[in-house]
Image 1: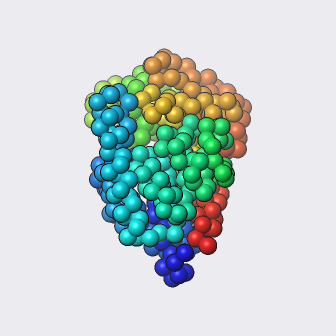
Image 2: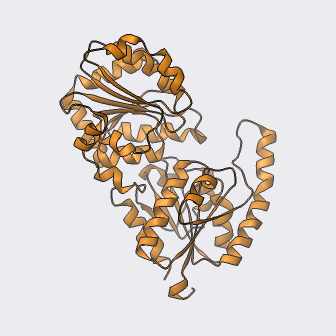
Image 3: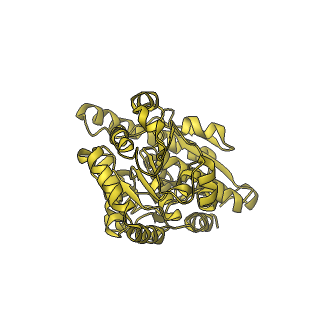
Length: 372
């Protein structure tokens, strides 16, 4: 191990926000505990990390690798052929940087980096966000020094030496924002049922399509709806909302293309309609927000449905499969819960019970233990 004054950590994970944002939370958590640590991210030029990391205090180096395309045999072969190249690029970066620990947060970029670290005798920690582990983490688990999970269900798919269910790191703002602050942010009343619908930064076409019909059903009802469409569909949706929705004396609709400060939305709402990505579910859990989950049908190995089913089995959420989602189905499900406050309160408590507010602190402690 290097001298205390020059401890070094590599974090590999990216491609999507689900892998990148937990990685950033871990980096900042370790840096707060060990201020002298030198942190390097390894990612790809095409992944979200290539845009986000340069805006942070951390450095990024890239390797040439891509995710396994499951829809085309030719593209899948091309992806696999890049693995040896990515491995040697990762090996070179690790050799030159000489980290004390390598942390992988899943996704295709983490595989060659964590594998190279393991073969070089560097301590490794991997974190799996989903109830059904991704291919990279399934292959790496038996080699890693520590395997950290968000869902207990993932354990049975992994062969590993040390497994800990830590949960997923959640930004402190999510946990600290109050309902009063959330409602005030949108000009909403505390005495009226509030629904939030969102589909991630790009939106979800199926949720948006169903919500167009739902908002019209509430023209005569005292309901507050915060609908975050995603930037792609915003203008088209705005143009297609019936004028009577905006003119309603009872319904209050706030339509936004994107919301950076999601903590306000989650704090204000009584019920959410959303996808079932691991990061979203972790945020719902720490605030105890019950949800109608519509898993993204094309997620790798259908992991979003497995995430959603895990929460539904615990009574914390309802699930609607994307294929069966329309305005009728969604409206009936919302009404079923809106008109049953006792059930909604029970779902909230069960959702909160799944929350792991201490996840980041526990992960940081494990990573720091690898430095000694």
